[in-house]
Length: 486
Image (cartoon, rainbow, N blue to C red; front, side, top):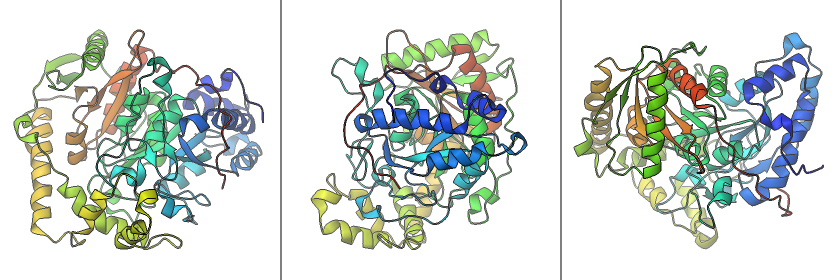
């Protein structure tokens, strides 16, 4: 397989343009897949964004090429990567753990099955912070025993400095930015989609909890977990969400939420009311500059901006992780009970780690131990108290108070506010803002629960006004050992 020195023109197309071209027959799924696999194999040994390459990807693409145009789906021939805590039939689901390398699910997660039915080609599984960054404290973003340390492709501009990858969907964000795939799917409990999207300069969408079913996803929290897309454009994210969204009988949260119309309204910012929280005490100068650029474009597009201070800010300092610690044990035990080769419970996982902790847990296992120390059935009164407090501070006396004033969305600098939004279960979107001669920065947009379509439309209008995402310079191709295939 040849390694192109410069990106193939195919790689310049976003998902919407690429799928339109393959459905018409201007491009074949096979040539698109080969172009992406060539680039992935050239650059991933340096970036460590992918844990496993799908050996069936080219065969899957060849089958798609045999379909008549009338049977080609909305994602026909689109090469994607799936975070390695989401089940893809025939590929390992490791959650980044060396102890899970032999776990090969027989069935796709429902969200994966929907992407496959729409014509997506799965190139492989994306690296992540091990156990979705709820294994221990102090583990670097993007590190897993199974995949190594993910590297941000923007590092080539930092004169020897290191740019964080964000976590835990680190490989998904890096792969989209480095054009190792046309789009990727990540998961978020608190910041794990929007953080890597922000750090790599791509679009990341955390939908309302329940919009996308969580069945077949290695979990942390029954109240906060969700999957979502990382893409080059907001319109791409809307297309992917329209495919993935919908109820699943095994996920109670998805059964409660009606599926919104994800066809984006045009000129959505005209007449919109947008709240802006610009007084974040820990924002950087780059984040402030990106917010200023966004405000200029929002006003030019016809939006009315309102200065805000978050109502419960004084009470938010020192937020703890109790809710996630209580929910992690029963949700992970439920997933691991179906694992044939690998740990069968959280206690079993800890026992196996203890046999070789230097190799299996080089940064420790603090959070696993904290979660395993709970009863695991959410019957403890302290859990209910912690969950009620989270909802009160994030939603009841926080976001809901602001939205009651008639706001369509709220904007934070950088990704500040992601934890508030995650605890409320509301949608959020990381949008990159191009800054001259600098790696990307951006803003976080959020809106009320169930308003995903409105949020995407507002963000798409701003995304178009800003001119889309920037791509980092190509890293040097690596001659390192090729990735394992499955």
